[in-house]
Amino acid sequence: MLGGEALSAEQLAAWRAANPGATVVNEYGPTEATVGTVAAVVPPGAVLPPGPVAIGTPTWNTDAHVLDAALEPVPHGVVGELYLAGAQLALGYLNRPGLTADRFVPCPFGAPGERMYRTGDLVRRRADGVLEYLGRADQQLKLRGIRIEPAEVEAALLALPGVSAAVVVAHQDETPDDARLVAYVVGDPGPAVDTLPAVLPAHLVPSDVIAVDAIPLTANGKLDRAALPAPTRRERGYVAPRTPAEELVAEVFAEILGVAKVGAFDHFLELGGNSLRGMRAMARIRAEVEVDVPMRALFTHPVVADLAAEIDKAIAAEVADLSDAEVAALLADQEDPA
Image 1 (spheres, rainbow, N blue to C red):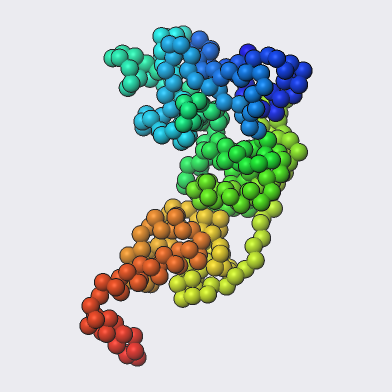
Image 2: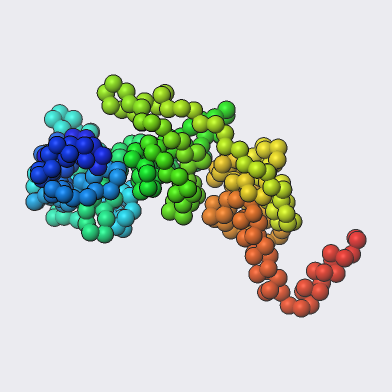
């Protein structure tokens, strides 16, 4: 029976070699809930995927809720914070009413007066009901105005073949606006790393994925950020804008972000964009094309060429709604030198 720290399949495999017939119980639970509250049973011979071993399902008389910031349940497969409820919950912290009120909160899913404990741990519930531990909620990052859960990115990295450990940090470059998401992995994901944009939103895709021999830890087992190798700025081949819309987007990005040269495949966020700069950029673009391109288009299509294609679609839709007379009038205005 193991508990207290996250268990990896690699650690378990090494122990299994000498103890092939043992049943292993991977147990999770805080002191505030009398320790053991969630457990996974791993029978002899079980084949586990690389990475963290699942923590399992709630034990008897325990309720485990996976909730968002509004205390609403998240769908299966979505990362949320783990809240525990049940008869074994502690009454609170001795002589610390403020901390008690912060961590022991009313339970909206139980009887009147029932409470639940906010663990501060991020988990994901699989379709079979099993919980996977992903890290601490207080490790949340804020990058370019967007809140990021490193655990969500790390989980996607651990799902790649060949990756046995992963950690994601915000790396600060020369200026405060030049922070970027950097991932460090143990192992070699190979070409599979290129699949990350298909499983993660654009703002969660690391700008660099760096292979290391081991994740550096301090003497007390915490991540040693100072020992992580500094990433080098990833260079891309410059591709000049190819259409009028791409030229417009590249020109606006360069002006708003203070970048000397922007190419067709440059990414707004990786160039230092954030929500405030995005609003300014889209206001400029709307003024130039005189078409209402929604703000969300920038964050769903942050690459110059992709955003330009969305602008062309918006213009085409606008023109399609015009009458023949209105189209003729517009063409006449364009041909008139005045």
